[in-house]
Image (cartoon, rainbow over all chains, first blue to last red; front, side, top):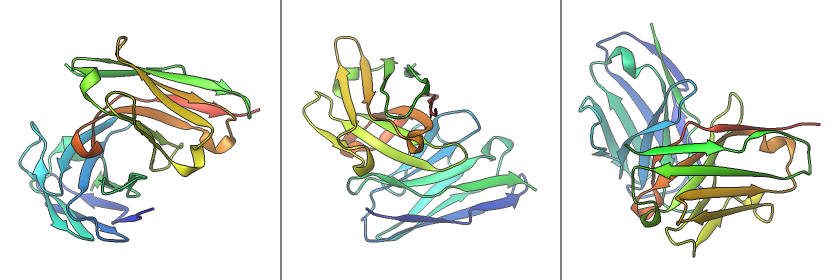
Length: 107
Length: 118
């Protein structure tokens, strides 16, 4: 199975900051990567697919980039509602796999 | 709006069975693949299974193959996960999720807790 390694596992930031989360795949997956946001007790919110395509309705302060094995999620001008856990997920092959998550906390 | 509502969870003894359901609304259920994904308490996400829009194709996580069966009833807009021979490591919140093209999950339910314990 393709392993996804996310870093950092947690970070502290302030409203208005820019944060970057990385996701590294154990083998090349092209651009078959998605990003999700999870808040406590909730299902996941779909943010980005195909590494950099923003899902409809997702604010433009979210940006994804990368291809092959290295990917990033950048959140600019962090807002209070952005404090959550973020997961990457590959859909290059089965089993689908997720990164371990990156928790964005308020500083 | 799109809604996915899981039901059927609870506490079950090891080696027993449980069936989860996921009621879908707000979209054309029969046009989409559907997934089950789980999250053990305090842990990350683990994909479990997927079924194609018409039920003809299924894929499973190796550790559940032969024990879990994903199915759907497009006339009832409902997805199922039959879980047999349950183990402690199956304890998790189970989410159903809609699949887009190329199997990407987009909309997710709120999840349903399954606890396997004696």
